[in-house]
Length: 210
Image (tube, rainbow, N blue to C red; front, side, top):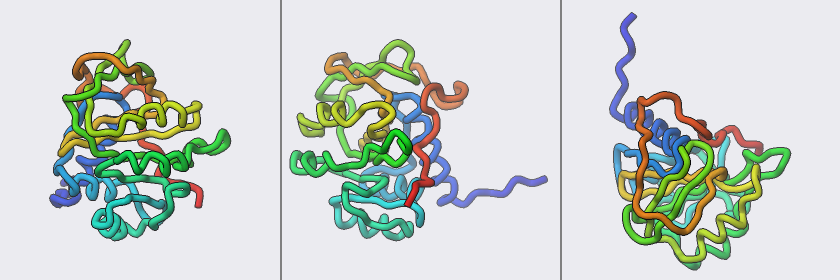
């Protein structure tokens, strides 16, 4: 049997989905997307959202692009996926309302996709499932109050799963990852193809309750 040949769009979509899965399964380990900039957010949206999901973004151009997936634009307190190409201090107060799920339905929490600068700025130490001992992440471009906000939002299994995007690079931080404010650089031995991802290898379910 001859395997079907993927179109470029199909191959890119598969690459995006794989990067998302590996990033979340190996917190703090960089993965690569087939495109960068705002188009990276559009490509991620095409891989994650559809008629059954909702999204929020403060970026008007991105909102228009994401609407083409058929997903519905929703307020922060109801949106399943939230896209912030640039997270500013003015976004923090509204972000308090982002869903964290419930004990009955923890998958009803919001997943956050946030633009940042990787490799410079604040040093963070990461611990938790999918990490051997600890790993370190250096990141800039986020408001100072974001990390305390994330910590306060997480009461496992409640909380947010999130991806951090810098150009065509992406890092995942599931709600199971404990973050401490020190470390130096990124070090990670996990690579695609090295076996099944550990910890939270699966993406948050796109099958949300209405």
